[in-house]
Image (cartoon, rainbow, N blue to C red; front, side, top):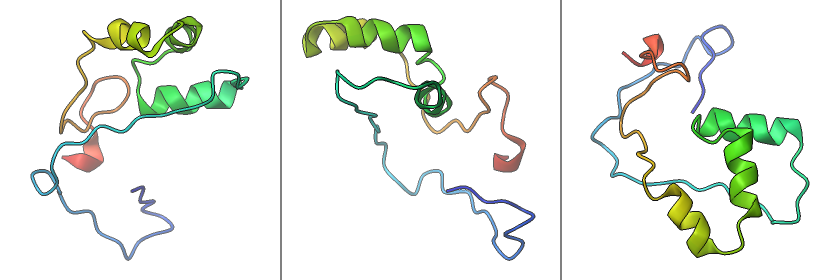
Length: 93
């Protein structure tokens, strides 16, 4: 959930680490969808390791098995709130 300190001064942030179990969220789209730049931007902000080239490579693959194989060695971050540049998020710590 996003909180803007200027427009939401009455809201406070609480550390929720350890409250919820681990889950993985997936982004899906039809193979025939023309991905616009803002769609690539959203995907990369959501998952920084999914660059435009990586997404295009995955889309070009023929089967879900090939896509799974492409990503099998990707290590996803867990309970590690960081900015896209890998530095700790000041608001989260």
